[in-house]
Image (cartoon, rainbow, N blue to C red; front, top):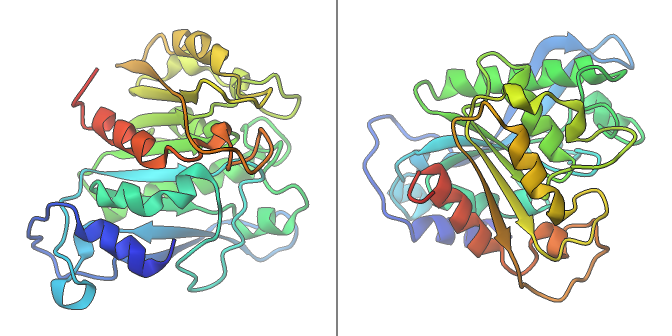
Length: 289
């Protein structure tokens, strides 16, 4: 999505005045100093695309600031790598969450699209097989998650911080509700990695300890063998301590133009993006059960 179109999407939403002096609506947050790289002695760097609709300036951006509802931290699937470079404020990722980042911002969320740390970006396979804290490089990924969540809470004190993951990204999102302190205030799991997968899936986490509300989003026609829609009810039952847990099922969309486990298929809610974004936003706002 081009930046101009993204700003138009933001401009269509109701606006409220903000007290602070507005900064950039779209920027890159650079998080470093929390650990060394695992492949050399240099500091690891985590880059985050940050979209803050509350920072809009009518004279600069063409629309007024939008009231912030929450921070929504987005974790993409696959290898978890976006390959962000210094000062880059856009990504061509087709991942469902990443490609809808501006639509989430238009709903009033401060959106943080998290790239894997630079050492994971340099590694063949990226984060694959290392999202769980007990895996060989899982401690490094956990340190990155802690640093990202801490940075966002410091930037936006008082706002709830929700973690949303898509496919393999659901593992990273769930880790933030279990191993990060304070934990994520809520979870959104889309096309959840229920497995079985030898390297990582949600069976490797004690989801019964998650106290935060959790929304499980699935497509009835998801043909990916490790994100089966029929597993959603069993996944819901594992959240025994959750404040509130719900499964939302979708159908329809555009004709797939990618493989079953890739984003431009039912697995990635291809063709029903806005419908799914709207449902997620309403549920976070507690507009519906």
